[in-house]
Image 1 (cartoon, rainbow, N blue to C red):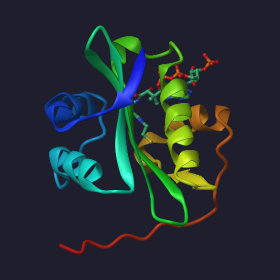
Image 2: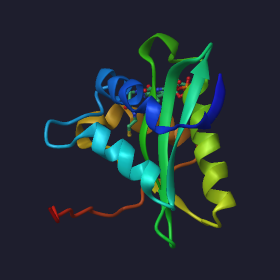
Image 3: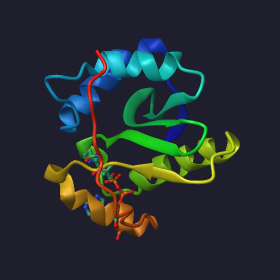
Length: 136
Ligand SMILES: CC(C)(COP(=O)(O)OP(=O)(O)OC[C@H]1O[C@@H](n2cnc3c(N)ncnc32)[C@H](O)[C@@H]1OP(=O)(O)O)[C@@H](O)C(=O)NCCC(=O)NCCS
């Protein structure tokens, strides 16, 4: 798998992958999320490619204080081959290059099984409760 920054032309493939991976929600436009991440100066989306096919993604950004990871996904047919670990390592490298000293992520309560994956990568329970509010 080769990892590189995605470009606008990858929007549909990424949104389809996120949909198949169960990461999309009806109230959130994955295409809108994709565009905002690429438009922002402090965020990007890294894609994993095999033979030109997009087989994995990770959205990464920082807010000047901490780094955040979203939309980590590996094509179902390619899971269990270490690609998720490679994508997370690339996201962490990108954040280090941006000067971030800490990275965090949110896991939906309906996706607790994936917590074991992050545990293996050294992610710890941050013991916080997240609150969210729509601004639009
Ligand atoms: C999470 C995800 C990206 C992992 O990708 P992957 O390429 O299969 O992961 P890796 O092969 O790098 O796995 C590394 C290790 O974590 C383990 N692991 C992978 N997914 C796991 C999960 N859901 N729960 C617990 N452990 C998991 C693997 O067994 C492997 O362990 P090993 O080294 O002992 O074999 C992939 O399962 C996925 O796309 N899931 C759907 C989308 C999702 O839930 N994303 C996270 C949103 S917070």
